[in-house]
Length: 154
Image (tube, rainbow, N blue to C red; front, side):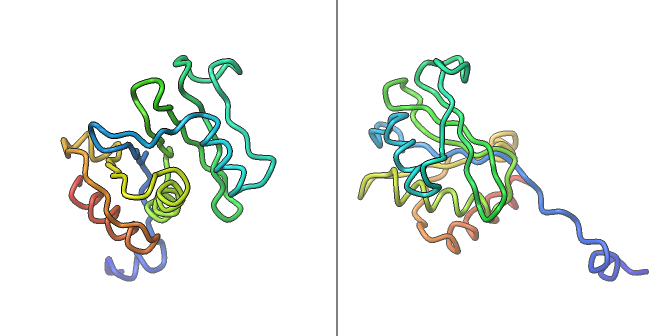
């Protein structure tokens, strides 16, 4: 059997990695655990919760863990507020399409108008890629940017 036939019959799973979104250097989104939780509840309803340091979550008192649902599938992530000096959010072990939906939501709900967003991924950092300015805002455009980033990291 040739390679094309094998891939059609037995497709490889799409690779997963962690995607990280942060304010561009020298800027802030003004994000706190409360503003993040409010935005998450608007998306996912009242059942959305975050786990903070006080709940036994991350060791940094300005950080939190969360679940983010796309379709019927939950994904784990972490965030850190502007109060802790490492403001940003990440979504763990996810595909490009899920990361694009997450990033579009972050940009629409948490990033102030006109504010800049930098991004990278675990595979990008391991490959030595610098953070990139994220100008795309639609899911479709974000998918294209993230796919190109992953290809550049390979």
